[in-house]
Length: 229
Image 1: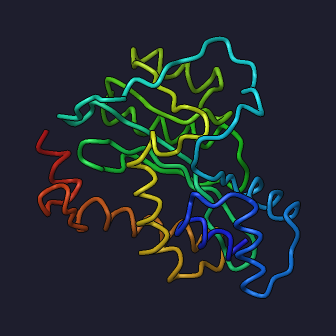
Image 2: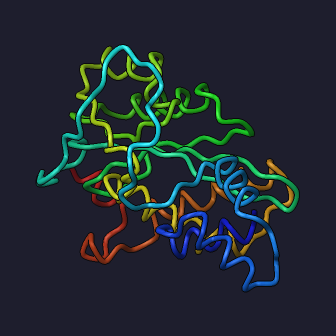
């Protein structure tokens, strides 16, 4: 799972066949069935157009992707969120974060040892105490398509946008955030425990928001851009 996590971050377009072949090259003769099972457990899916082989779970209402061709011109115009796998020395956790697209500012984050919806709701609630976006974009994961999550957005009069299925690049700014978190923090720390992970991630997100300069932001920090809105 550690190797799959690192390789997925480098090549998120690898499907199970290529991942299996890559592991064989590293000296791990695992079969494709096991690779598929581990990727599913980690919540990882290759980024490429795929045939419609599965149908999303039943939901009361479906929402279109609203951001295609849209100019992102101000803070709180678009927020999005996602979940990623974070490895520990023994075991793993899941990390969810809410980000403002214009400033790249991480408004809130939360970790969990399971993929239930409650930790996503907690992070969303904390983010909405800061401000209210015009549009909130997510993938079609069960956490974000749940009635609890969408009802919280609708109650705040926020327009809901869903990625196309199998199109992680529709949520590109969160994908870039995950690459930064993993290469600049997770892979070099090797967390011992959940508490260790929480402590280090808290320090990293403080650094990311208030100290890390972004070329796309004219070498300002996300906090500088977000607080000057």
